[in-house]
Image 1 (cartoon, rainbow, N blue to C red):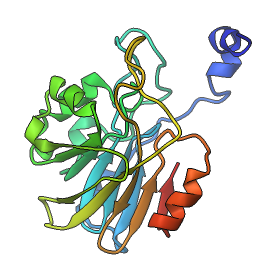
Image 2: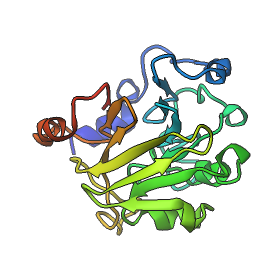
Image 3: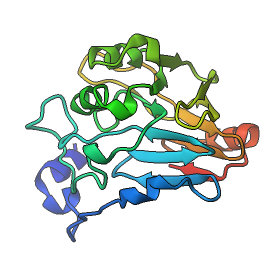
Length: 225
């Protein structure tokens, strides 16, 4: 009750003091594989393009103008994506950590499902989210849903390299409306390539599980929290 009025009425609580962006990604960088095998491009919020040992993946991609059930309401992004839709390179895997609007935008998924550079992409997500992806245009045969501690190995189409995705617990929740909270799973992920290992915490709050994950699956070359 104390925080909500500040969030809704106090502009200082909702907007940065200085304008952010615009940021631009030089797409020529994708013409050459990363020299050490690992490279990450931040695309705003939790959206990232990760290149790991010959596999290229999009993580929680959101190009929507707003995070919400409609395109005229909800939190508005502070700047456009540094990478335009028509600039997206060939993608091997799309990783969706959970169903919240700021990580899973209907309009974005619909557009991605029609892009030629994603026509051979595999989609990895959590239990229950696959139905949403299918509803938004992704073919069911291209989707793998994971429970916590389950893994899947995916081979990329571009360079023939493979990496393993393991879904792990996270301190968070799920739901896109008033009545579907906890009906779909949320997760953090370990992404393991031939030489590098990456941890993506997604929206996890701080918890003791970080230490357990690090001990069991680390060390990590990159952590994204």
